[in-house]
Structure formats: structure tokens, C-alpha cells
Length: 199
Image (cartoon, rainbow, N blue to C red; front, side):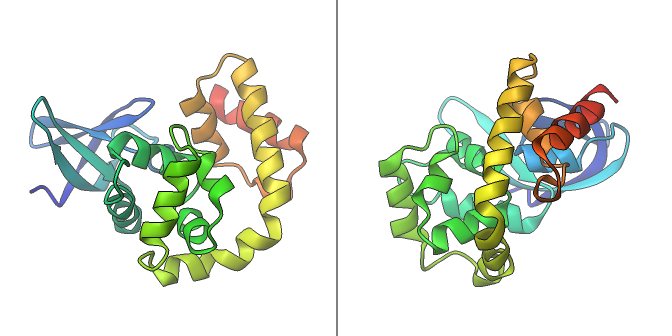
């Protein structure tokens, strides 16, 4: 099993990165948050991975931190949550917020992720509410409670604006991870995001 890969970032795609190690390029599926961390081709990176083995394919999933990988592994331990849905959840919000959403049984937050309906969200909460790392949920719980409503509204509005301008969902979500949404107006968020996208 490949625990992590250390090498140079070769390519960045909408849902994956390629890491070169000793002349071999490893394509690793990842979240938009990790993609934002791995944004400069040629830089030295470490990506923490899990190998997914199926009858018809072998693939790698990986993240910029071991905590995010651990959260992915917890999510995919739930019946009906595969790698694609697990990555989708982690792309919809930071992994610490995922832990908080599960701990506080916030089904709506989980349903914001692509491919997650009410039944899946309920199953995730039921199976993981006693398993999520308490350090992750405690670190973000207070912050999430005080700022979630306003920042979530701004996030959705900014996301829709970027999509309407022709950017892909992955591009829009990735750049919004780099913007301090909570301290900006919606106009400032969009302007900042566009500057980053055009850089």
C-alpha cells in the first residue's frame, strides 16, 4: 500500500494532481481544497494517499494533510459512500467543517455536496457521529456556528456568479477556498476570486 508520495507537482487537473517521483507520474484524485494547496507546478509536495482497488480499475486518492485523508477514510467506510462521493463532500467544505457537521448532525451542510441526498446524509451522521475526531470538530464548531449562515450564503452566491461566467464548478470551488469569505462582501469575494482565476 502507498502511504504517501513525495515528489514534484507535475500537473493540476480539476479533480486530480500528478506527482512525479523518480521518473514516474502518479495521478492522484483529490479534493478542491487539496488542489488549492498544490497549485504551483514544479514545487515539492507530499500527498497522503489511499489506493482504491476494484475489479476494473486501480486508482489513487490523496490529500495535502493526513487529517483530510483520515476524514475521507471515515466517510467511505459508510455504506453507499464511494470515493467519488467522499471527495465531493470534502470539496464542498473543509474537512474540519465536515467533522463539525457530522458531530452536530447538520444534514443540510452535508447535502450541499454533489451526490449526497437526505438518506445518505442521515446514514453518514448515524454511522460517524461517534467516530469523527473530536479535535477536528471542536476546533471548528464554534467558528462554524457563529459564521455559517452568512458565509454560506455568500459562498453560494459567489459560486453561482463564477459558474455563470463560464468557470467550472471545480475551478470556482477551488478558488473560493482561497478567499476569506467571512470578512468580505459578496462583491469583494467575486472580485478577489476573479483576480486569482485570471492570474
